[in-house]
Image (cartoon, rainbow, N blue to C red):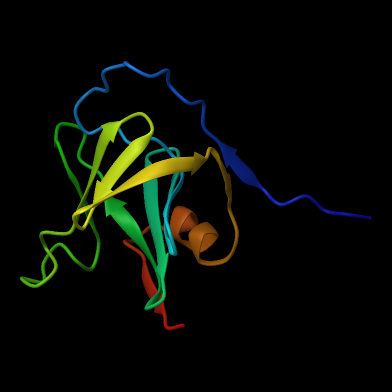
Length: 129
């Protein structure tokens, strides 16, 4: 018997749609070898970023009225507190000076991402390459 993995489906908004302040669009964003996954379950938002340096999964410190969103574990470090998420359009996400296009709107919810979304406390895990 084959078991299907849970996934999150986000409905892509049309081009030219103005997003409310702080709106994030769940999905997979990719720029070459770098990838960001944004996932949401209820009020819990999680980030998973992968690059040649490893994979970081963390709670997004979501604030509905904020223009940018901070990631747990980076928000209080002076060297990384400038690393924030900004949804520029429904299909582009800015992070760390890079604009990532949305490449998939289905997000597989497994492993660390599942733990992050299920956690009642801020979640942070880094896995080296």
